[in-house]
Length: 449
Image (cartoon, rainbow, N blue to C red):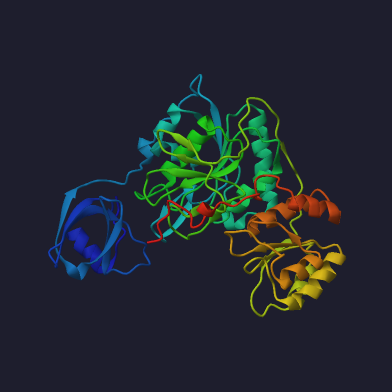
């Protein structure tokens, strides 16, 4: 295995015959002894430190000037090697068929240590080589639909994914898994919730915060849990399955219209907003947590809607926002607006005349709250009542991103303002709650330390 380090760090390691992924021991000048795997460093990093993967899974950076002694313990190599890939097996008779639709993202990527960035696997099926137990519960097949980072997703991509899901479920798949980047996974999960009409089998989006070639990856548990939920879970909805804690204990299945990425890098980055997760999944069990969900059926037919109006904008209100900002958006051809207001769903009163003008011109304006948790209420303060009088559509506790996606879906079906208002206020996929329990906030089983 080549050595990625340069300069002084490289000289120190080469003198001891140490290469990337070797198991080594270091005695620090403070007397602390550390053992672990030497992790590669990007070429752009300095030559004053080395990185060690400890046995507890965490990385530690060590200044070479602080090292009293360094010793090679074993020539442990990188976990993954092409020549060790498990041979693809023929489908096992009697096991359910579960397709994995690959769209891209970290879960199908690996670290490029020349740059320090991640890049897609050339062969996405390599994922299975680290999770052989999946082959014991399902015949997992791969559908390389696209290979993009999720920030590049568009409504047309959502429709393409929905069409592929429709084909797979209607042809007998037990459930469908979608490998997806985490940044916009909650947008796609919400979009599929609406686009897949008559859904009767599980559709599960899964991703990773850390690529699968890293010892601290979350991809292994996430993907295994997704397959287990697709095969054994009783829930037929669009869901996200991701870590439920920082460690490899369990994952949560979160309803697609309730999921939100709430942390940039933690493995348990996704939370269920305003309701408990649908299920808690371990390697041995599935514990159902949600009370109301669409139940899996043996037979049915799902239809993927093929139209979404992508000229819809999500606008967060801020102190100082001016009415002409709304003019600018509409002048650019946007046909619907979702406002993420403050608190109970408020915007500066100076915007209200412009909102009234837009709604009279046939531009639907939907009001949500940027608070996320809790329910908006436009009947408490004067500003809210003026907004209702100006024609805004109040959607309860619906998340801003979900309202955006739903309005795209609704405008793909109708341009009639009365019908738009009716559909936006109707609870179609569990996106609006009739009742909010006091226990949903602060969210449980989450450490903020």
